Image (spheres, rainbow, N blue to C red):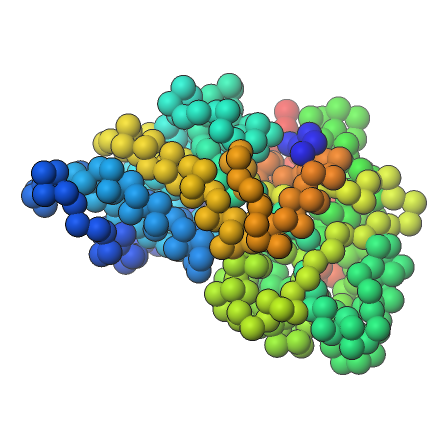
Length: 436
């Protein structure tokens, strides 16, 4: 893999959700194998760790199996687990952190999202306590700040265009390599009363995948890197304006399902359009494989993928990818049992866990030594190997206020309520304040 390089507004709402830790979640203790009698402990002797994560389905099963292995090694420890879907999790976790009641071990994405809490003194420094050589360095770097490790990565989630190959075959379509090809696919699908793209953009980040890819295809990876570093390029660069214009071309062509900006992602309504053949494509991370296996396993035989197409005169390399380091496991600085929490993190990111994670969810990983057996994982691994650059999600890289504005303006571009020029101007104005 070649070189690659959140923000979150701390909400004051729903303080009650932070209380009680894992009381409304699942407990990892229900199926724990009986401990060796020689190691038996009474309930009163148990230490308790709370572990929060976002993934359902087979990913959740992999995590809970890792928890069971940890508990077998540490019979004096109980682990309370809580699964909360992505967008609710971000709010719940922020409230827990600000309220001084965070979980011991938690899901993060690294990048700016994690750095925000590191800056508040809320995340434990694990430098020297985990084997940094066990992870892909460029991914580990995304949770390393000031030379200190604040999270270790398990998954490497790659964003691709996923499509229904049965529908493509029915209408004589092939995966488009260029923008012109993509527009032909969109028009053909529309003509046959099939929604080209399923999009659930109420949380704003799903639409951002289109924007980031288009900016990369228009101007190459240096656009974002330069704008972020305040060296040469800026967020009102014509590359960003052009990316917005391409999005609005798709919107005006009715390439998306109706009401897409008001549809939540976690509820799964958009995915159902995809599973049922009402929509032919979706731009999403490789988490769609896990979603499919949990929600519509019969659809997997129709599921396929292709890279984001090039644009006319674009400077971006067609091999460039969008990816996210997720999950990244981190430890709260407030944990009563830092050594045990780090041991749990090690189990959650062990090679055994990573191999199972890849085999069962079709995902690539950031843990070294894993052999890809799942066909989706193999193919995604090939894309990663060929990539000349990998960009991380802007909202997990930019400072808090700028990241939120990026999502807001991108959603407004999709909604045709803001011109690409206006959106780019707002981003640059805020960047001058946030990136000084």
